[in-house]
Length: 230
Image (cartoon, rainbow, N blue to C red; front, side, top):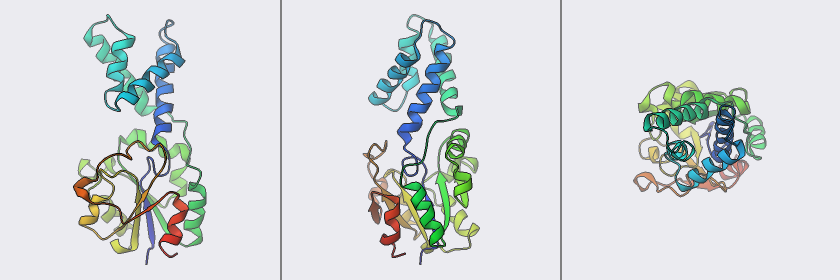
């Protein structure tokens, strides 16, 4: 019997793309306030275009355009500044529309809840605070605060919440979205795995790590209650 529901954060509870847009907006304002010739709306569009090209190296490529003609050291410095602004800004984000009903369902069924999320600890804490997740979930694990060896698909965060709530792994269900890391741990620990398929999810096209797929999939978080026979 499932006693604990654990969730990923990005593209599970909040669309990662919305955070990206919030971060690009913060970076655009940062530059436009310092350089009168730069327009915030145009900068944000530039960042978005580069993001659509590739999610990696966005600010490296963008600063080469914005500061064309400047030294490579100057451009690298500006890219580093933007990365810091992006990671540390207070994001304007919100839960996806099914999350509040999902949270009510957890309480109604007497289920414990947790979030397990990878990523820069400052960035993830800002995201979690922005939506009130520290109040909404019983336990939150930001894996990078424990060590790089805790990042998914490591089983360490899952063993931690099992011990914290005094439940067996087979009494936990985990909901994630990223095939590249959210389900492969199932080869080592008998947690029920569920994939949430959200339109616009950044990592939806990733290949499955080790070919290990989720056991179940849903399009709305509230579907898990009937799926698990709760």
